[in-house]
Length: 276
Image (cartoon, rainbow, N blue to C red; front, side, top):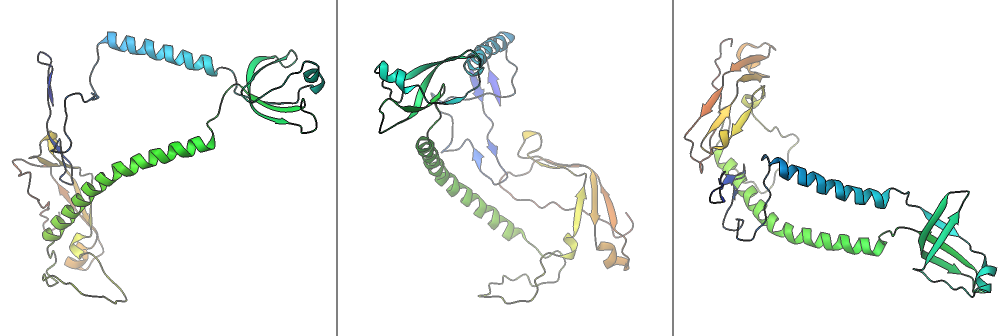
């Protein structure tokens, strides 16, 4: 992409992932009023200083609110004192707790109380200086989040399923007989009953060591690169000379240009039968 500071305009390069899904497209594209985030750009030092100052101020507010331990108290007040003063409590009232020996001097809220049926001035109080989110609130919030994820997921599943189908069809049409051992006509049995099924061919029993394969090389959809490395085959030497020695071929770097974006390509290595 490119940015022109004079005109305040961005030039966006379309991106297509490995499944062939391109962005932006007719459904997903920038519009007037949209918000965006720019990553991996160097900001002016004044911006950085301002952001750090704002962050420090917010952090200090959080520390001030949370520097004291969040505790819950269970108290049984002197009911005689309550009766003498005709004191009656309800959930949500504030009570000051002071204890010189324990170093407690706080104003805290009643979040739960139990009152004796026989004595209306006898309470058991549960006090705290912070409120926990109730279970029903958490369940409701999680349900709303789940609804949103499901609604977003429906559209994504349709697009993803279509891309997966397209990829499978492309792969199916590109499969070919690497060993020349089976009939290439399509087989569509109604049912199969077998004691053993062997999947794969002898020619594909290899690994690539130290090779990095890059599609869209240099952010260009028409370029492809495979780095230098080794192709190690497990059974080729057994087929050629009846020995168990594993053969290793050294491959050089390969860069291809001018590829057609809408076409599928094979990647192959030409390996000699002689000692590599």
